[in-house]
Length: 230
Image (tube, rainbow, N blue to C red; front, side, top):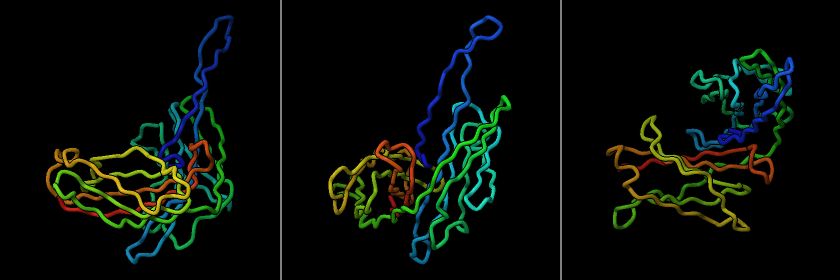
């Protein structure tokens, strides 16, 4: 995700073939590279690079070339052909952000056409948020999460996991105050989670920094988590 929320442009063109007017969907994809920051088990901030390529046209393969010339094949998400990415592991996170510069994506579509896309990575990063509290409300019907605002972030997104299952996803929302609020607070009714039953829930708070004010391609994200037993 630079889009852990990609916007896609699909162009519909009309071509004349053998005197008959036929519609053809033009192969089009969006390619994004961004930095993800987390806190490791020692509490230090570490960084990994994330690649994401999305298309409404089915793709059969995607590779990306780094500024150093190294090439990586991206993973076909659920073998659907519409989304390719790299799955980060603990070993991918390093104390310094990844190399800045142009990343070139080679995309092959089902009709055999191959297209190239470029997305640039700058040195801008955002730090993981400090989640200051996660608790039930006094009357017990809601859960509130509170965190310190992340410097330079454009928006926040919250996901709730139970084990490996995502049970809640809050669409990204912006803190439009200038300067950013010193802290933000958000709550949910427990009824939203009750269907998943009792247990330990992980609240994931993501900060989003976009490349520009058009809020499409992402430059950096950061992730913080906190658990609560319900």
